Length: 243
Length: 92
Image (tube, chains in turn cyan, red):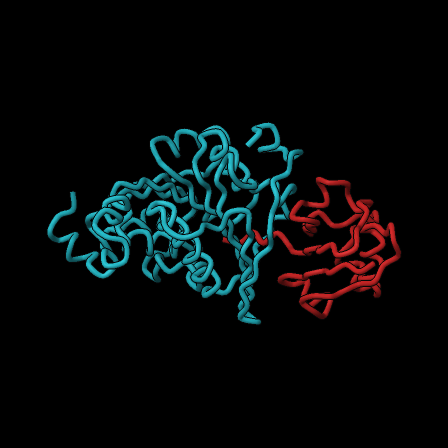
């Protein structure tokens, strides 16, 4: 049931998907891995859309060189834990939603507990080792995994539905070397918004998801292309699931 | 036969185009295609590692499947194939 305030707050989007859709968003439980550049954009738009429960995991503290792209962290937050900084802003944006924080690094041993009770995983990570951990837990729990990544003016995104689509490992069998990539803040905005859009569509059951397609954003050419993908039977992570 | 190669992100700059159509002999492999595409030592350094193998941070898809998982670069090409070359972006 939506409150009177919620009906007012979300009036302009209820016009798009109805009160029933808004209720679905309120009941949705999302795990956001990372409160960095992508994570800031994703969390902001999921919070204002009225996603009912958002659990954010990140073990970093805010640094000055994060501020060109991580829009939930401000000058006064330098030195503060990122999930705390992010949660404070999100609660100010929308006091009606529940924001939980997990100030821990994501790894194989703790990820199952982190995502317990949640319906989907959104990728705001900055390395492939953690993404593979999330990919595997999404496959094991049969919940969707919304991937995004950025570099400079370039970005990519895809939506992984276990049993139905390729998994992250089908597309990227080996982790690229982890070095601090150059990133322009607007790219995190573009790709984070695409990921948040996918989450909303999934929850609402609207439109066509980015299934078996890798969306490639070229900010320099201002071009959005897509690469068709096929599930790989020999994939290390999903090859045996028979999906 | 002809194959179409699509380049994304930094590979557009390395290969100087977003897309190229390449004429190949029948039975040519992905490795043959790479040899034609990488026509300078600078380009080869960006595509192959020190052992001459395709660098692991470069992704190539043939018919939507990763070439590493199909048959490495020995994979035989067919007329009309579309090959996609893109990096694994990892920033967040």
